[in-house]
Amino acid sequence: MNEQTCVIDDKPWLDARQPPFIRIKNVTKKFGDFIAVNNVSLDIYRSELFCLLGGSGCGKSTLLRMLSGFELPTSGSIEIDGQDMAGLPPHARPTNMMFQSYALFPHMNVEKNIAYGLQRDGLNRQEVKQRVQEILTLVQLQDFAKRKPSQLSGGQRQRVALARSLVKKPKVLLLDEPLAALDKKLREETQFELVNIQESLGVTFIVVTHDQEEAMTLSTRLGVMDAGEIVQIGEPREVYEYPGNRFVADFIGSVNIFDGRVIEEDTNFVIIRSEEAKIDIHVSHGVSCTPSQKVSYAIRPEKIQMCLKKPKNVKNLLKGRVNEIAYMGNLSVYQIELEGGKRVRVTQPNTIRSDEGAITWEDEVYLWWDGAAGVVLTS
Ligand code: ATP
Image (spheres, rainbow, N blue to C red):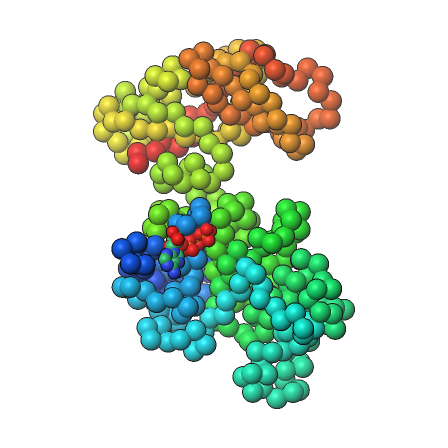
C-alpha cells in the first residue's frame, strides 16, 4: 500500500469514492418561529469521532437529538448506514445516546446498570454476563462491579454510563457533553481514555461539546456551529490553522485580529494595511481577494515572536509595551500595547526555570512574525 492510499484509508473524507456512514441532508429544526438548526448538511464516516462544537444555544444538542430520534427534523433527511431514519423511534435506530447527567439507576450496582438494557432486549443470562464482563474490562471497572453509583467518583460514573451505552453495540454512539461533570484534570485524562475506547471498538462517536480544547483533543474532525448553522467542518489542525472566517478564528483558541485593507496583491504575496496597528502586513502567499478589499488578518499568539532588541531583516514588525503578563506554568501570556493603543496577545513557552533576563512589565518590546504565520479572512 502506498503512502497516499494509507492517508485516504485513515481519512475517508478525503476520498470522494468512500460513502459516508451518516448523511445529514438539509436538516432544519424549528421550534415555533425559532430556527434552532438551519439547513445543516453533514457527512460523517464510519469509525469517526466527530465533534459538534459551538457556544450555548447554537443548536448542537438539537442536531444530536434529531440523530437519536428524540427530536424530529422540520425538514431534511437523516440516513445512517444506508437507512433513512424518517419515522423511526429512538429504540429502533442504530444509535445510542449517552446523556450529560449519565442517567444511572441509583439503586442498581454497576453491573446491573450495565446489564439492564441487554436484559430488556431479552438476551440470555450467559450472554448478558459475558458482554457485561467484556465492557467492564474495556472501561477498567472490573473491581467496581458491585458498587452503587453513589459509591463511585465522577470519572468512574462517567465510565459506567459509557459502558452502559456501548454494551448494546450501537453503530453510532451520541454523546452530549460527556465530560462536563468532571473537573479539569480528570476531564483531560478521560479524553484520552475515550479516544482509546472509541478506537478499540471502531464505533462511530458523535460528541457535542462547547469546549474547544476538548473537541481538538477528541475528534477526527469537528463541525463548528453558530446560530443553527455549521460554519466550518475540518480536522482539528485544519480548523485551528486555517479558520474559514472571523467567527471560527475567534471561537477556536485565542487570536489577534487586525482589520485592514489590501493595498497590494499578487499571485505570490499580498500586503494588507492595518491603520489600527499602523502596519503593512506582508502575507507570503496569494489570497483570493480584490484590490483594496477590506479584510481581517488573524494571527495566533504563539506565532508571534517577541524580543527586547530590534530584529533585523523582518517584514512584519511592531513595537509596543508590556501591559500584562499571566504566568501559566508551561507558558506565559503577554499583553502588549501598541503605540496606537491596540493590544496584542503573545504567548511564549517557559523553557527555562529562571526568570533572569526575562521580559517583564513596562518593557518596550518588538513583535514580529513570518509572512506565512497568519490567515487572511475575507468573511
Ligand atoms: P447548550 O450548549 O447550551 O446545551 P446547544 O447548542 O446544545 O446549547 P440546543 O439545546 O440545541 O443548544 O438549543 C438550540 C436553541 O433551540 C436554543 O436557543 C434553545 O433555547 C432552543 N430550543 C431547544 N429545545 C427547544 C424546545 N423544545 N422548544 C423551544 N426551543 C428550544
